[in-house]
Length: 274
Image (cartoon, rainbow, N blue to C red; front, side, top):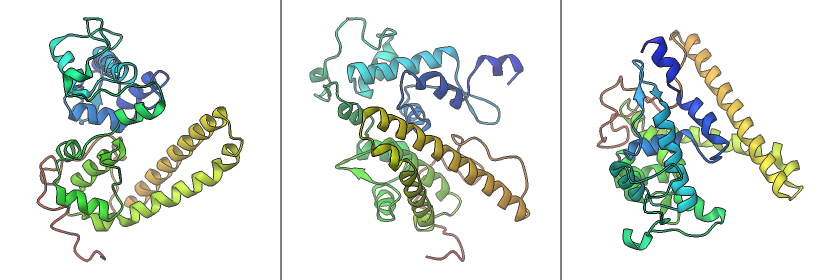
């Protein structure tokens, strides 16, 4: 990638910055899911990082607007992208909002935030296909508390976790080896809840928004701290090297992580405790 190309394209973090004011719920996992579903196709740098051009950002804006304002299912959005039957407002050229009845009745109406959250959920089949795991592997993830569902659906976080654990499986990591990760995350959440509790006790929408923003800022700092500690520990273990890649890059050096595994980490970690 030459310098001019790099300047013209945005990394995934810059895309989040570009769109977050308009779409507060946008996340790395959301963008990765849209890519896995074939709705966006960002370029890749030689080192494997996603790079988004102006057209990619506008396409993302259309998708997010279509979900938020018109409650379109991803299937309908993808069809409109493929046929060019859309405009910058997220609606079809026909001018109609959308016809959920004509798409299997999957339309979700209502202006409240609950309906918007529902558009972020995925079915079990969608999760299995996107993460490239089978039902037994998903059951294992659920049994160890790594993936949780809401009713019969799964959130974007569950999809992100399943895809990441699937990639780790190619290195011999089993779901049971990751219970400490779940425990550490729970402890971090407990710390964050304690820190924002005084703000939440004010019981106002503004206080809740402030608490949410503060919680995410603290979480980002904790992630930065964890990353720094991992890099330091690798150096102490005699495994120095370049800094860890940005979080949206999944390594491909061991086996073929992109392929389904016969079992999550079926080779196991020799000597690892159960």
